[in-house]
Structure formats: structure tokens, C-alpha cells
Length: 448
Image (cartoon, rainbow, N blue to C red; front, side, top):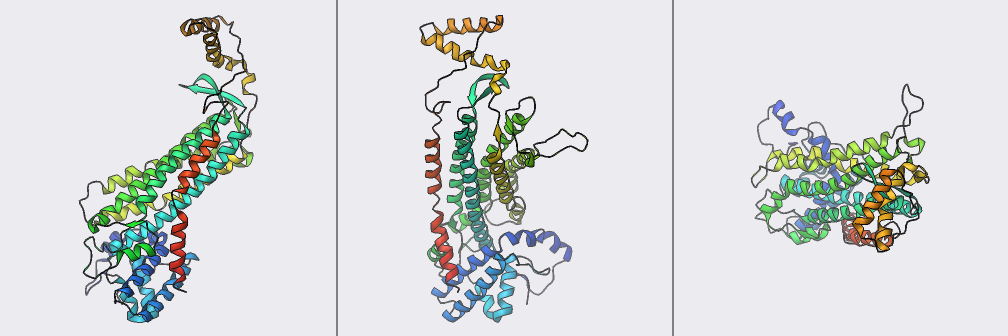
């Protein structure tokens, strides 16, 4: 039995094999159960066009379900002399069912197999990211409401500027995640299209029913043009990478704020001691290492679109082995982002804020705009009011009135958190995750 789907009657140089296989065995473990799902849909379709009998289909589905369960249990392995996940699955089927196992490749190429695997994997992982984003969003909204009346300095150019609040600060990052969700939704919709049946990128002479496999796998539609289906390799990863990067951008900015606000010079927030680390020689240190690592990991994820682009940007249409390298940077990125989201949500939940920041008179000048506006509202021309308050600050005679009253939408006194929650819920409802889950459950049930 050849352990490579393309193997003929000669042996490839071992060093060439090592170099070309690269990290595929390791990375294909991410894709194993999705390769099985794709095969289950494909052979179900093959039976309808007469390339498998009902009895063969039933036996193959049962064996594939066993392999799927092995994958789910984390026990799937690609043997040392087997090239990739596709070869391993076919080898396992052939060991159990003999030559019948070799029939599952009819009408397929490894090219459209890996395309399907990547799309099913990415679809699942995007769902996971969405769930983690929602958890963090809920924590941020809760903190925004909890501390909505606690004022803090707002900054421009790292200079004390105007009054802000912790309600605004936490709520700002919540709303940032709302917009990030739009990128995730676009990435999900581009991902959730079926390339199966494109074969090596030019279709097949078999009368494949691509609409059937599209429905069985829960895709919204197919990638219709078979050449475009292959051109989508790399493009999908790049577009998804941009969506991951925009979430990472929100996390990186918040992590920087948290590190800054936690330091003694600011003292705006207090991080739970179990979320900080110490120094080997300075007993007083409580370092915000978790947020520093979140910042670094998030910035690393923000480089992902550029890495993918530099691998695939100068390739013509058709398949090239260059695309294999994308898996090395793309597949692990989801777990890293999900880990950062989980850690951020955990710390936000336990974070405490300093409710007496403005007791320090060094922050009094930030109420100057409030005084200018009060004078302008009483009829003093704005420029005259501005000059008057400015001179008082220079002369040291300015007296801050900290009883401020903001009413417009999105301001300190009117956070509009309810509207932000509505936007987030509306965005999440557009993914239609339930439809995908039902399709996958139905496909697995057919193998019982």
C-alpha cells in the first residue's frame, strides 16, 4: 500500500521528502476531524451518482465516524511514513475495508480536500472567537455600568485633557468589539462557501453534485467557479487574518492602557494580585505581565495578514506548494487569540478602579473646558470665555467645579450601553451558527 496518494513506482529522495513535507504532519492534526467530515459529505454524494453502492457508503460512513471520534478524543495520529492527514485517513479506511477505502478519492484532489478542511476548521474557529469576544464584551459592559459615575482624566497627547469616566473607558472597548464583530462576520461569510468538487482547480469529468455537498456541510453556498475556488487558497486566510488582527488591535490598545493605568504614577486601576508577577530582587513589585503578554501576542497577530500576503501575493492562479507555508502561521493564530480574549475577560472581571483619582488637585485643569462652556452658555462669547479661563489657569486662580453634567448620546452622563448591546446582538445574529451545527450533526448522525 502506497502511503502517499500520488506515489507511483519510484522513491523520492528522503531529504527532498523531509523538506517538502515540512510541518504538515504536525499542522494537519488541526484539520483531521474536518477532513473526515469532508470525506463523509463527499462519499454521500458519490453514492447518489453511482460511484458507490449503498452498502459501501454505509460501511465507509461507519468507519469514518470511528475516525472522527478518535479525532474528537485527541488520539488521531499521522504515522511517520504517512505524508498527510488525507493519506492517513485513506490508509485507516483501507486497513479496515480493503480496496473499498480507496474509492473515497474519486472526483477529488488533495487540493480541494485541503481547501474544504481549511474552510471547515476556520469556520469552527471563527465561531469560537466570536464566543470569546462576546464574553469579553459582556464583562466590559458590566464594568462600564458598575463604574459609570466614577470620573477619570481623559488624555490627548498624553496630556491631561478633559473629564472622562470609567463608564466611558470600559464602554469604549466594548463598542470597539462591536465593530470588530463586523470584520469577523465578513470573514465568516467568505469562509462559509464550498470549494469541494473543484478538484485540482479545473473540475472533474464525474457528474459531481456540488449542491448536495454544500448542503451536507452547512455551507451558505459554493465557490462556483472551480478556478476561483483554488484561487481562494491564501485569499481566505488573508481576509480572516485581517478580522483576527482587528480584534487583536482592540486587545493591544486596552492592554497598553491597563499597564499604564496600573502603574504607581497613575494608580487608576488595581489588578488582582493573582494576575500579577513579582521581581526576583524587588519585593514590592506587582508586574502586569499578563497584560504585557496580551499586548505582545496581539501585536504578533496583527502582523498575520502581512505574513499571509507575502507568501501568496505574487502567485498566479492555480495551486503552488508555497501555500503550504501559510498553515504554519495561520492555524495556530486562533488558539492564541482565543487565549488572549479569555485572559482579558478574566482580568477585567476582577479589575478594581480608583474612585478618588480626582481628589488630587493636579487634575483640576481638565475641568477648564467645563468652565469655558458654562460661561459661553451664559452669553459670554466662546473666545472671550476661553481667554478668561486660560489666564486664570496661568495665574493659579482657577477653581475647578467638578459637578459636571453631560447629557448627549455617548457622553459621560448618557453612555448608550443599551444601544451598544443591541448592535452587538444584531451582529452576532447574522452568523446563523445554528444552521451549520444542524448540518454537521445531521451528517454525523447519518454515520451511526
